[in-house]
Image 1 (cartoon, helix red, strand yellow):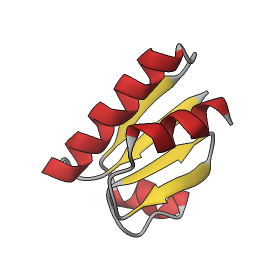
Image 2 (cartoon, one colour; image 1 turned 90 degrees about the vertical axis):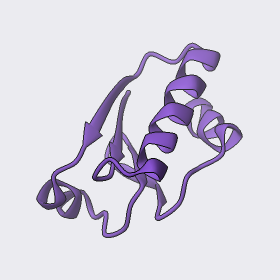
Image 3 (cartoon, helix red, strand yellow; image 1 turned 180 degrees about the vertical axis):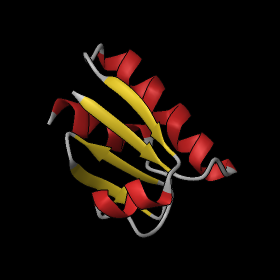
Image 4 (spheres, one colour; image 1 turned 60 degrees about the horizontal axis):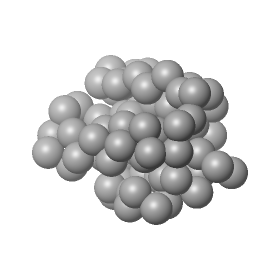
Length: 77
């Protein structure tokens, strides 16, 4: 599973990355977490607002920090 956290590195982006990392560890998911800071790459993914979470190419959350429970539900999908 490939998880991309999109954002320039603001406080909310950092918080989203922390929540995703914790959720991955808690559910024991086999996931690679990648930080995407390049706006052209974000646009290519279809992300126009940050922070955003993209899992296996599918946008799960945009413009807000997801809750840990939300992330867990996506991982267990």
